[in-house]
Length: 336
Ligand code: TRP
Image (tube, rainbow, N blue to C red; front, side, top):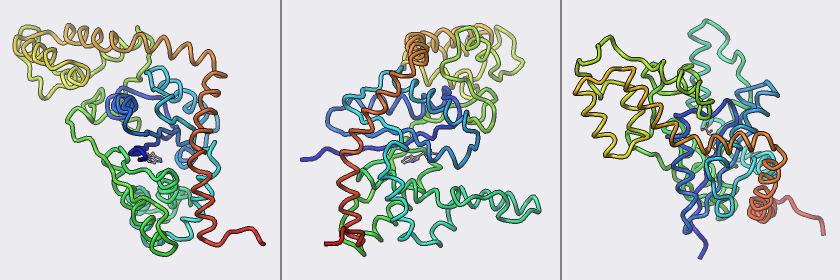
């Protein structure tokens, strides 16, 4: 019996931060160690082009994200780890799906609509600076998922609509051409710790500029943690853990016992400086070894590239035969 397939993509823009780690990378790496699932993790570099037209930034982010996942112990024997652009079957499938996806469906995509709304609000042309990449992006995402007939797709809440669109597109294709695609399901982690707060207490996100990069050198990590928002309460005054990003971030790294301990410290009036010092030690203790591996990997980019090439080979063992069937189904065939 073939294994249950879990797939997710990581857009290669930006440097991974603690929020990415807690919300996506850590659970994915844990899941990759399960022997009864076949997991697919990929660097979505074609998706990066939608948001970023700076070649060096796209390249740098791809390198950093690959090194991050490897440094954190992704088991690449068990999980298939590849770069989207190394699998040419994906953009080809994307085109075939584009010809079967309803334009009206794309009109409803949140990501695209948000850009239109922003233009309208600014009094600009509704289409100002909107590329076809942004507009068609859910179809590329559908191709990523359907290419491997993934059953489950772990994503953030903002991506649920895209998985539903992938289902719609798959169902329409299957209806017309026969059963080729599994209808994928989104998996959203509702754990309160899945969304990490940033320096200012809002969701940690690159777009808010409130992130703590995952592999900051030790001194800078300490500095960054010292910038987390606090109030003016003095040492000795009891503090409310439930409204403090210091505590919330603590919880995301702590064992249940360590969380109870810190709750008690807040009630007993721990000073902000001391709480942050302990938070730094907790996080640094969990990341220090991986950070060394990360630095070593970045110093040896040929090794990263080799791992990705092996991953692409494994991925293409799935994508090539499926695309052949899809081509045949739509009538793209050899003349004989
Ligand atoms: N669009 C996703 C995001 O921004 C990344 C992504 C691309 C993805 N392709 C995917 C996620 C396929 C899951 C499945 O987070």
